[in-house]
Length: 183
Image 1 (spheres, rainbow, N blue to C red):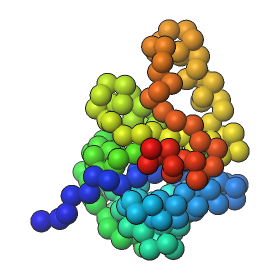
Image 2: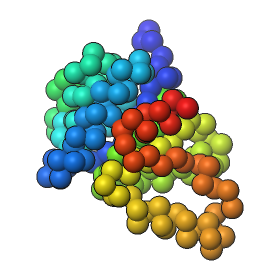
Image 3: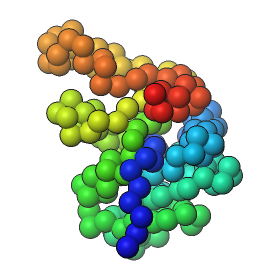
Image 4: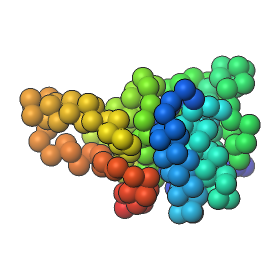
């Protein structure tokens, strides 16, 4: 029987590799800091983009890396070749559910629609009491400023309760993100 992991830090982030190096550097450093904290890193397990940088950063410091991928992604060989462990799921929903169940915290690195969807879903789960871990948005180079403004607007316009800011933390550096995740 496989050992259950529930103390990982889950990382969401871009799968695209065609992005500014500032984001790649922050992702790699985030992975290194997670490994140095002693927590496993769990993520979508992709072979490119910020996911790959976080995995490689954690591996460079001897960390535990776990990728969770739906079977169709494994069939297409989208997984990072140096994952310490890979978990196959039947679909995307189970992938997100598995990553959340393994984690004590989430860090959202910059990313596209998939990252945004994961981040908003985990914030929703926290609001509903379905996820109790810390959620940290790593706002590298102000990437998430428009999203933060939109979340503020939802609160100001009463689409979210006042005080909903406590559902997530903001961080401007990888150090701050990991520190808030461990909080």
